[in-house]
Structures are given as structure tokens and as C-alpha cells.
Picture (tube, rainbow, N blue to C red):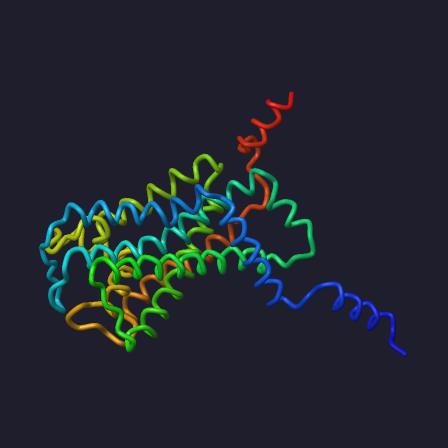
Amino acid sequence: MPTSIERVTMTEARRFPPSLPLLIRQAGHQLRLFVRVPVAVFFTIALPFVVLLIINATSGDRLIRDPNGEWPVDAFVCVAIAAFTAVSATFTNLANMVPIRREEGVLQRWRSTPLPVWVFVGGHVLAAVVIAVASVVFMLAVGVALYGVSVPLSSIPALVVTVVVATTAFAAMGMAVAALVPTASAASGVANAIVLPMALISNVFIPMESPPTALDIAANLLPLRPFVDAVQAPLHPVDPTTVPQWGALGVIVLWGVAGFACAVRTFRWNAAPGGSTRRRRAAHQSG
């Protein structure tokens, strides 16, 4: 006959599903929320696509030279923007959406449930990584169809490892920004102030063959340029690599670990006192 402790354990086991199915379910919930917000879909996927079309329509037929050979500029930019789209889906998306949900009280309601904290946060990160991978696949499909991008079968494993590792790290960085910003209204400005300057010096929108030395060093110490280089390496038209760029991924992982540590130490479930502009607006309208 089971003891009272055993009965409680059995009851808890029946009440709470295993953690992995919970994680997958939470990620699915976040994916559904993302799809239901057209603005998020537009800025994450559609806007980079439009930017790609505009840049390549005005770039001409020039070639970009790097240590491994020459790239057609339209293929070079397409792969770079594919990497940037993945950053938008992880870093920018989480940095913006999590503070909004915190001010709306969604995080506080989730915190009061038996759902493990790591499952809630992990579900956000996993959903963001799935969106990022889908975004990269879409942009590369555009590149293959319109700009002559080649995806060698032997390079796909290196590309997959690169995208999954890097987007997970950028998701952790996005959660760190979400934890640090005081209000949801500040989140968008902070995220863009971080990611857009990085993009400008990371060969995303403006390919730079011979940048100033200081600028080149700064770009390689920040996480976006190594990610762009690591995505471009297995897709190079002259000498595609078949192994991940471990040095570049090492830089990205260091930033991701720092972001994760910051997010864990500073994450807030409740809005800062006096900082919930959305709640104050709702209270004012109801009054």
C-alpha cells in the first residue's frame, strides 16, 4: 500500500506533464502568438526581404572580394541579410515582445502557475530559434531563385550548426536586453540602437572590402559580423566550407553566455514601479 508521500508524488506526476513536452508546448504557444501579430511577422521576415530587393536592385553587377575569392554582390548581400533576419527573429523579437508582455501582466500570470521558469523562458527561446531557422530558409530560397546562391549538400550540416548555435546565443542576448530595459516603450529603441549599428559595420547592408582597421576589429569582436561570416562560409561560390567556423562561433557563444547570465540575474516578472505605461494607459481609458 503506497505511503502518503508516494501518493503525493504519484498525484504530482499525474498533474504536471514531463518537462520536455511542456517545453515543446510552450514553444508552440509562442509560435502561434507570433503568427497572430502581423506587425511582428512583417518586421521579422517581410521587411528584410523588401530591403534585400531594394539593395540588390541598386547594387549593379559588381563583385565582392574576400580571402576565399569573389562573390556576386547580390548573392553576398542575400546571405548577409539571411543572417540578419535570424538576428531579428531572435534578438530583436525577444527584446521587444518580452517587455510588452511583462507590462501587460502576462509574465506575472505565468509566474503564478506551476510551470517551471526554465520551461517558460526556454519556450520563448526555442520558438525564436524556430522562427529564425524558417527565416533563413526563406531568404536562402529567395537567393537560390533570384540571385544565384548555391547551397552545396556537403555544406548543409555546417550551415545548420551555425544557425542553430548562433540564433540560440542571440536569443539569450535578446532576453538580457528584455530584462534590463525599464519599459516596453524603451525596448524597441534600445534593441535597434544595438543591432542597426552592428549591421552597418558587419557587411550586411553595405559590403565593405577594405574597412578601417579599428572598425574591422570592432566588428569582429561584436557578435553579428562573426555570424554573417560563419553563414557565408559554407555558401561561398568559390570555396564553400564543410565545417563550421569555430572561431566565429566561439565569439558568438561568449556573447550568448554573457547574455544568458545577465538575463538570469536581472530578469523581472513584474513591470518596474511606475514604468508600466500600458497599464496606466488602460487605467486612464477605463476611468
